[in-house]
Length: 377
Ligand code: SF4
Ligand code: FES
Image (cartoon, rainbow, N blue to C red; front, side):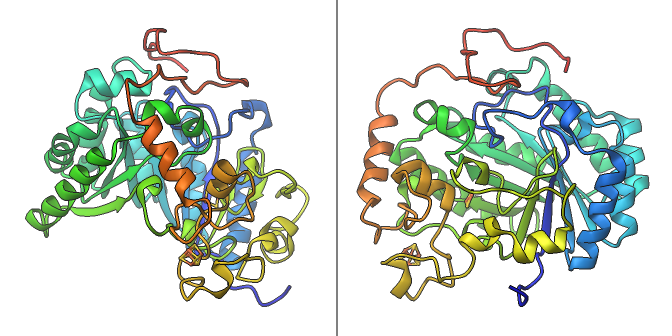
């Protein structure tokens, strides 16, 4: 296949190490250890190849990307190749010197995650004692360094009732943008779905709050609101379509169309250690599998939205229907749509179970009774 348009952005998951343990982490349940991470030179070669391929943006992500001591070198390299650089971080490993080094290296934007509007909830959800307060300090340092700031708020059943306060926090911290995203249920989020699934009432209230705040804060704060699929009537255009706009490189160098693609059985992902990025983007079987509209079943195949939402999310189709090749069940035209709604209604009813916190090293075992972890990696 030769005529494939270039990707817009590269999500560089430079490490899976992370001091936080969020129960909705989109990383795989089996996390690759530090020794399997690509080294500095390989990442720099990948950024060079990405720029040649036509990529415009690099989003540094993880795990926690600032756990890598060479992050400023990676940012400087990406910047040198003309790529826009964005850091997606929990912030808890940052300080003034590190922020200044990243800004000098050419970092252009910071997305800082918050787990709740205040410390008790934030530290409990992130499984990291002292994290919320540290994030507030880091947000101020980011702004003092002159970097634009987006606050990322992942919302769910256990923090949605604090949404007004979360928006207030974004204004107080002089953020330019706030991304309010309902949990996506794959990776650890799928494991914790019953603990995180909001009620329909919560979702309706949250949507009304965002609508009002968007109006009230015009010119002050830009809102990016990701609605929850389980109560939706149409799916999101996940990743802008499989293999159309984004590529994701995991810490060990595997290249994937999205961060959850490894959950799909039968797909083999090629590595930047063995192939050029351009070769993988244009020819890899995994990218071609769901690219475009040829793979689509009915009702997508004859639907006039097929080149708008591209049939929704493959990983969600797998998680709910057991087959990644099905129409995303978030679509009300899907024969599986009722299953998804039922799941949401059943799981959001009654008290939430304890969180299973994200951890390195395999099958989830750690329950919420364990106290929030101290400040260490
Ligand atoms: Fe999108 Fe397929 Fe639903 Fe049409 S039938 S709206 S293409 S998911
Ligand atoms: Fe994989 Fe949506 S997360 S296609």
